[in-house]
Image (tube, rainbow, N blue to C red; front, side, top):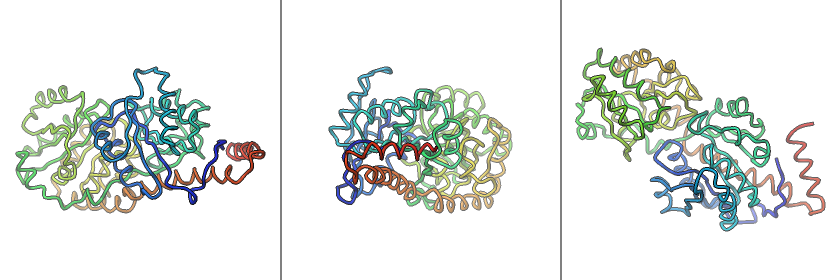
Length: 410
């Protein structure tokens, strides 16, 4: 732990800690949805949240801007060095006690530089993936920036090991706070009949679907090719593709080429994700890379069996044969076989779905995630108060050196 020379008031003797969450923008996506839920659930008696988007607010940022202080357009171009000064001034003006960067890339780099310049007591990096398009990169692994960072948050145990072993962040700074979903909002008792009618899908039609941005790493093409195989065995099966993105025109063309135009429904960005998940029989994910995707947890909370690849930390939530099935990445035949199995065996699908719901309630709840962030921020701040707040200025440098040696070992 690096001790900073700033007068800190112990939590019991002051008001709530002011926490700023820093992100590039807030489009509709898994990490952004998690951030909305986290901010809304923070205990306002202990924390006052604010949001800063380096670029535009985005749709979810505009929603949050109606609820909390929100700032945007702090960076003008990729190598805009002035962003450090602008961010630091913002942190000082808002008297920020903790900065939480969300994701890797620019916000993780510029945010930590600015937080150090503004002498922000608590600096946390929350990470949600294991690679492109939000790779950590060489600059974000600089030792000086690591020294200025109090914690790197992974979203599952395997992700935490990845941050330590592959990204080379010190193990004592890596914390795991599992992603969480609102099991009251995502639940299995939605009325899917009306929604199916609105979508033009027969009540008894076997229905599988995916919720993911239409980007290359999500590999929707693999699902389309597996769907074509499924239709040979189950001709009346249909598929929902929920989400939007740059890949949509290409994927729609592939769907037509595979003869799936009438069977695959491209729904774009939707606000009724709980109802759509409830209408499915099976949830599928086909990503090339992931950490702990929130879409899987939402499907599990809705008591839907999940078919997903063995990548990232997915194996911690999708337990093969208990909450769904794991497949080899890029194996369209294996995905098709599992889809055929689950769409043709409603009792097996129901049993795996119920197992997923129980797993979310036990391990992946929104309450548990929020408590994890609250405890982490408060713990770091309190530790620094203990290290500096009770000591005279004359001995603070000695305390700082002792803390540094304790952290890195002899």
